[in-house]
Amino acid sequence: MHSSISELQFAQRFPFSREAKNILRENNLSLDELPEEVLARAEAMALNAAKGKDYYIELRSSELLLQEILAFPIAKILVSMQKDSMLNDKFAFMLSKSFLKYLDLEKNRKDTALELARQLGIEFEIAADSGEGFFVSIPLQNFLKIHFRRMSLKLVNQHVALGKVFLQEKRFFDFLAETILSAISASLPVPLEGIPNSLKNSARQLQQMLLASRKEFETKISGKINPNLFSDCMKSMYADLVSGKHMTHIARFYIATFLNSIGMTKEQLLELFSKQGNYNERIARYHIDRIVKQNLSPPGCAKVREAGLCPTENCQVRHPMSFYRRELKALELQEKAGRHSR
Picture 1 (spheres, rainbow, N blue to C red):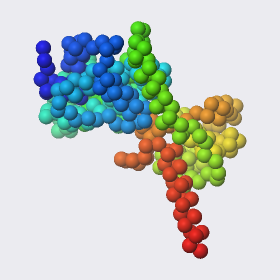
Picture 2 (cartoon, one colour):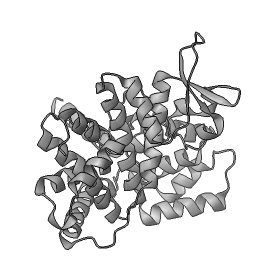
Picture 3 (cartoon, rainbow, N blue to C red):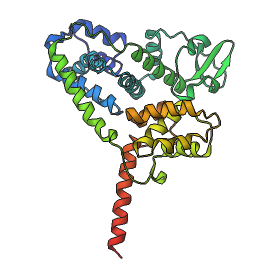
């Protein structure tokens, strides 16, 4: 049975849907005989996730749409073979963001969202018109099953009544995106028994590409540290650290990895962290020793946004390290030009 263009488009936009799973079953894809185009698309998905990039493609060719649908489970295999839990999270986050973009393309977003919610097993009721614009209500215990990364979905920001959480349309879409993120994260890593050598070779090639893309951030920057050149997120966390303002564990971890990567010494880090009200030298030294010895990489901006630590709306920075390197280079060139003009 051949699927129509509209069916293929729906399955490509929402690869976790029942429609996508039906198309996969109908095509009975063999891992031993993967078309090169499908493998290439799967590699692109995995690589975009690793780099924190969006993955969003509008296609109208049935052949290309089918390739994209078939590539999704292959991408999950390639990601799983990297044995990197952070990459698993990035892949799931990328798909949740894509969901929201693709939902905007649907002629009837509400009906599409409700159908996908049913497929995901979400219990909900259409909200009665109360004048407050609520779209659906979700039982409180079901709402709390999801570990939300978007600050807008924290329970403190919701309207709760009679054991239900009432959501407006946009917030319901965000709730769906978070549910999708959790579902895809839970599905990774996939079982890897019986993977053919050809796919193992592709996974190794992908690993080399990932290592190459990370290399820039693994080399420490030396020289005097200039907080004025930090990206907004690191500037904000650094200001909180210097002022002694209470910081979450993840914020402390992120700023410590960043400062270590730009050349701050272990003792300087300990001195900074001693300003925290709940400072415990033994615990702080343990965590900082681990960061320094393993040279743990600072987070990309996707992770900072997930943690709710990005203070700038529509921030265009992709990684605090690349931003800082670029700003240092620009300052260096500016100072050189100033010397030559004297």
